[in-house]
Image 1: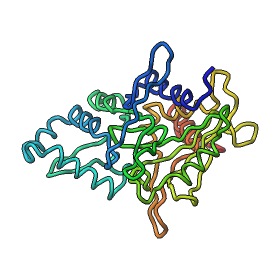
Image 2: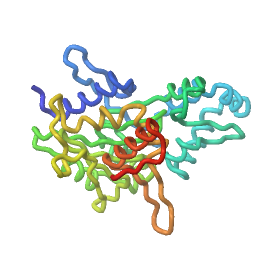
Image 3: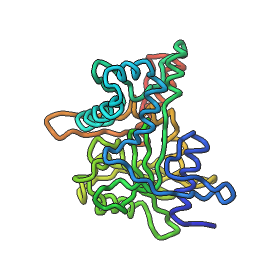
Image 4: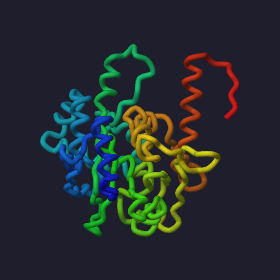
Length: 305
């Protein structure tokens, strides 16, 4: 039995690809061994998987893209790419995904969220064209060229989540993953790791999940993203595999990711430095249960949470 970290990474990626329909942008899986054959991919300095961003836009908004090409000609791609990067740097990834980008009078949506009803089949079709993808061993740094994150997850080419993985049988735990983010990652000089560029950074082992929304070196504060077990902060045993499997089986399912981006994640601005608020597992679970109950039974009920 392979207990290596690479085997853990392979297991997660295979699930994302085979079950959730993610695109694997960094390698392929050997069918016989189910081993991930990774060719480390260097992320561009602008932190976009631009090929997928352009593919999403031209597939969902072809008329608007043609209008932009009429204005910019052969420079349409480069000019829009620069515009998109500037807007992400100014407003953050979350706001760009929710509100889109306008360039030379042409408005582009960067994601389509679930329609409230099934009465608009055109909107439902656009929702189905969102592209989720993953890069393994993602080389993101222009300074330390061999630095790599275990996994980076993208929506329509824009980065959402990074993951550092550890496997307890190798002697490494989620605590080592947290320390790696705090001590070995440079959020001041690496655009991908800067606040609001990604929505969350996950430290993951086979039993537990922790997350942060802001990397600040040794001051980085992680919070548990665990399901709770017997009054504690861990996770119940999983008879079918890893105790932390709910992360990729549930949270990273396409409908869940789009629900998080569209409705749950929140940037709080005020007198204090901005905060990006990401729901803990139990908070998200409670809200979803309340909404489901209200849809079935109507308003006016009392709840104790």
